[in-house]
Length: 102
Image (tube, rainbow, N blue to C red; front, side):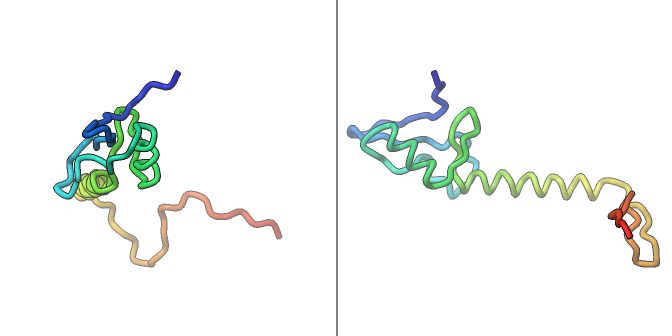
């Protein structure tokens, strides 16, 4: 049996899926209200919400989380000591090129 990961809100015999993270200021908090729980889950799937395994994440919160990861990665890269770049313009990061058979 499949375990439910969505938090389902109920209001006036209508059902909606709640956003799990709510980290974006633009997050609506929940999806559109539908006639059944199944329809509410289908709605978030159609709207491309992400199933994190712990709940559904709306697209605006997902975008904000990904942007935060990118910023964190840039900060980590900035803190690393930089290798001096060769002056000849060649890419010495490649270990092996494409093998060709003549």
